[in-house]
Length: 396
Ligand SMILES: Cc1ncc(COP(=O)(O)O)c(C=O)c1O
Image 1: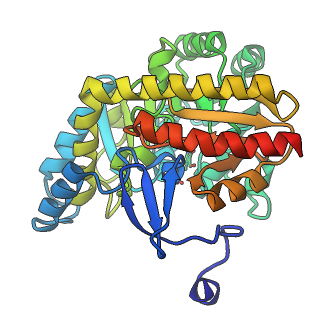
Image 2: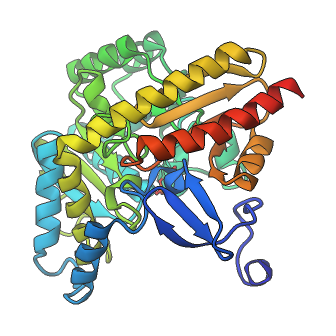
């Protein structure tokens, strides 16, 4: 802790006072060997938990081959990973990057290139209040939350922020001018407090975009790769996005992101137009390949459904017992939010002290996003801890 304060930027608020040195499945261990149940998965990243034997073996094998060679060369792991993304989503082309914000940068640039191919005036991008799309200038400019952009102006021009779930506002904006080239949205606003998009809104948004030649970018950075019980969240909504952006769970902890777009858009990124040194290196794509092959097996999504049903069931009965503390329980699959009537950080700290890792977002929303392969047994252990904390909180 001393070295952290001495040598590192203190940009992450107060870190919780634990340092994990070991992990297995959905458990993490601190320096004293104390076990913590992981209901957080490092912000929805550790898809298969920690030290998954097959994953470890695959990564170890890759370490003895090149882990990096650059995008000057062909890369078998990258091509295989791109193929799997297309098989699990829609036919198209993939571009690998290193993070969620970079995946969105790529999508925003592709959207502008699409707009400029029609008219120089067609550059506006719509995003929605409460969204989160990352911390680079593009990602931050697309993020319709003042607190994320504050102090970094001027931000990238050409973004329009509209209310979430309001189709009339979108229709008005698109019909008012020919300037809109794309809409970017999450389907469950993760950092915004696990707010699920209205199904009818998304269906009408998708229809409107395709009628008007406006690209629909679905930010699946948090919701993708099985988190919601389907490979990608858009598959719950019956729509066909033009572009999806991925990161977090894609590499199961190895940093990697991707933009996947329908094939017709790929010529817009011609030779030399966009790129990255690390993006899609051999190690990252070996990780993606392994994770996506696991995702293709029905067992993983079956587990998400059954653990999700179990957790929702327990949370709903907790809400019935403590309606003054628990306002709402919502989510999809293992992307679950518990909206409280008061700030939730204290509960996160109490849970950690009791051996359970949870998270709080949007100040009052407790977020539960365990590894997708968490067992019912471990989920039950974790829920027991959470229940006793929420019960004593409700009666205090
Ligand atoms: C929906 C969404 N988009 C983009 C990002 C940014 O991803 P990264 O932190 O990997 O840059 C996040 C991160 O929380 C996210 O939840």
